[in-house]
Length: 278
Image 1 (tube, rainbow, N blue to C red):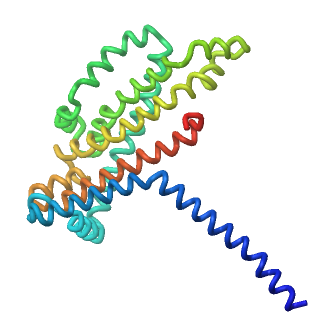
Image 2 (image 1 turned 60 degrees about the vertical axis):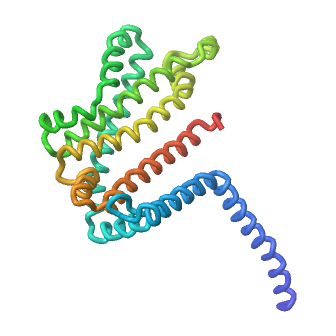
Image 3 (image 1 turned 120 degrees about the vertical axis):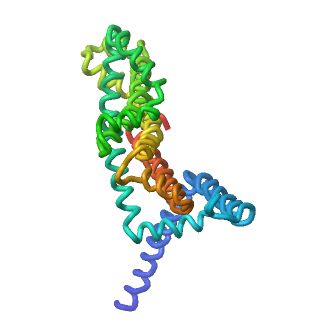
């Protein structure tokens, strides 16, 4: 009985192992299909950057190579300096970005649902959106001090207007025929908003969120350049003053990867909440 059990167990285990290998192969193929060209373009760009900085320029005072930036990144992380600056900038970005998104969606909803509110708020939105808020950063630092609150204000003012404009546009582009169809089945105003208008506007709202990421990161850095005790912008400014290009590019690279990661996260969330777009 023992000699017969082993071959049967072996035969049963072969298909299971084969299935696991097939699943892993499918996952790897799916990952490469989704991200292969993006990873390839990044690898090519870093290779060109390395070649130019090493062989054409050859002086890290003018352009640091990716390998030199990686070394500086490890050194800054090992000393704890990078974590300190990144934490301060993260707090400034988080509070400014979150408050701007919440207020921006609320204002966009008000402007889309009320003609009077749109007429009253439209000049302010258009005017302030065109105003170079970055140039006003020194004024905000004078008003609110050199601490974290002045940076939060700069980030919020840069992020809020794309969110307002996209939210209002998304709510206004909801199909009137679809709304009338749902209303004919007895749906009330709340049900129409939750079941029709909001799902229709979600792609626009997410577009505003993603546009706000880049503007928010720029706001953090610019506000810290004008005056800060800590933060990635302050680290970049100090590195520029001492001509430490590897450390400067380490801070810039960290901000770039943060932007890529947050944008990719919103794209993933958008695919989950709006599956009918795929």
